[in-house]
Length: 430
Image (cartoon, rainbow, N blue to C red; front, side, top):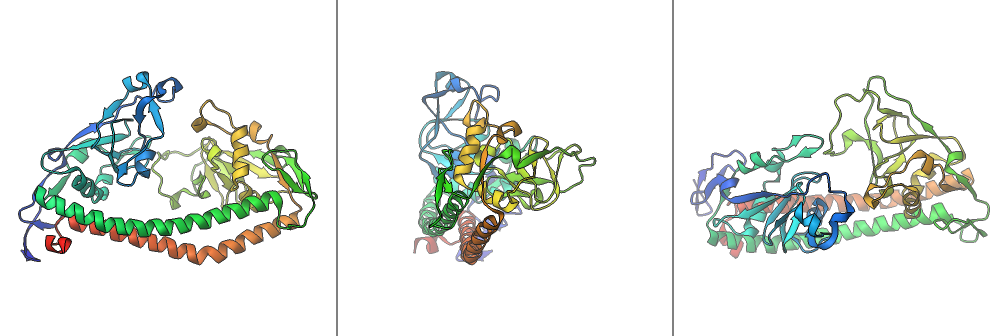
């Protein structure tokens, strides 16, 4: 078949379809050597392995990279290096657990955990083309996933996936074209994401001020006696959480109720509405019941703000904690309070654990936290103020979000078309 002056052939691979006749169809294991990171689970949390001279890259660092991994947040010492595996600069790395399918090119030698694999290209391809090619295969990579305690990509299946590769001379032209075009798209996406960030920062500032200082600038203030609160309106009360909440520990007899998720981003939501890669138990008998209006904390991630008021009835993990409101604090006000940075910092202060990433907030500690309690009429005013601000910004946020999604779809489609030969070289170089 002739198209755009190029002769095509059927690749024999469903997702590829027709490809240029002179391009080669082969398995990934014949295109790149695959290495798996290594950092055994047992010593992973041992602080004696860290703070050394060896860069240690984790899945979050790969997810946050923009094509190249340029920086790192943690290091290993000699002992940590001994239980890890080092990848060389120029390796294409991909996360196979946690945030699966994220990719980036390593700019320096670094150690990796077993949740990351590295691809060293053969003499058939350059590293940049491999990055774009694998970026276009994310759906195929995800199809190899298996569910253990969490969703993991299967390395053996990945190595046997078929893909297509052009001659090296054409790869250079394709990568130059994609570098140019994707940079323009990425700049547009970044500008729109910055606008979303500014809107969210404005909302956070409004909430933090409203729940600690109120809305009336002329009110008389008093010292709260709490570092995280500072001065508060004279007529507000301070109450310990134990006077405002009680523990609900009711268990499901069948496990058939709606399963709820608790995160620092969305608060309490239906798990069915979220893309979750963690293991879901087959039998949820004994999970904790939660009713609409209850306050729920994610014990593991409470230090990040993973808590909120449930908008519906359901069940949550038995490791979470469910609380019933019993005082003068309105659930909607508490929902705002736990979205404020000062309150989250106070939750961290009362959490227990050796490592900051392993802190836990338990009822006996949560109950000691002191909270501001405005009159109910004022709580309602604050809730209404934030709701109106949210409604005012809703249309703009939705427009920005939709625009970003379309740009990302365009970027993905462009990469796929280029690396599978659907765009003529003449068009790329014109």
